[in-house]
Length: 223
Ligand code: PMT
Image (tube, rainbow, N blue to C red; front, side):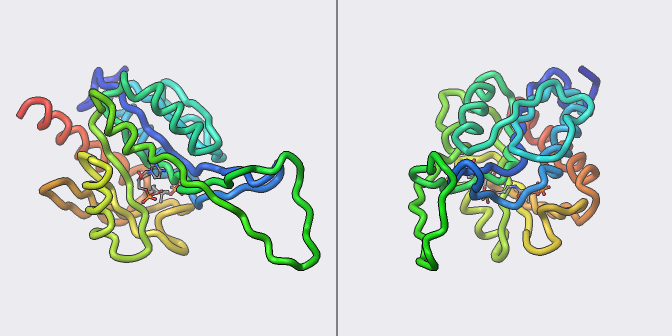
């Protein structure tokens, strides 16, 4: 693995959406192309890290330099893959748009229309992957993302505290913003810090993000 501020570090990145099956042909999903997370994985590899990328269903190739990609579909599968990797990771960056709920009982066969009657889907809450990793005996340095349509910084700060994160990268999402775009802007929030990373191509933004994460990770290790 190359030279750079993350040389010798193991970095775990989760990216893309999760799909929660309703029946064999339909699912509930979040809007995410995977571009942000894949750019973060590529930037971590370029900074010298050994990177494992846990990916929901996306149309992207494994970035150059990323050591391993583990493909998953649902939040539960993403949790299982992340829990396998997290204990041996130095840093976990959660850029995935994980479904908060899944259908309680997915149908075995394609559901049929019911003559104009309303259809009710019963949903069950998915486990929170970041909070589960934060509760490990020796959690990695934890970086979350927060996708919000309003009050971005306030909600992100709440997630930083509730999920026991070291840093959170907050982005405003909506039509043409945050997801499914080539560019993005982030506010990077720590327990006592806040920095705006202005809108630019996701690859460039990911490099700036990785530089900040590396600096704070090393500051934490060698205070
Ligand atoms: O993929 P792109 O099209 O490039 O879009 C990028 C993005 C907008 C998806 C990305 O920048 C982003 O914001 N990802 C996080 C989206 C999200 O689900 O945010 P959230 O605010 O709902 O979740 C907060 C954090 O908790 C996230 O780090 C998420 O991965 C994590 N989480 C959420 C739910 C859950 N059950 N487990 C989790 O670990």
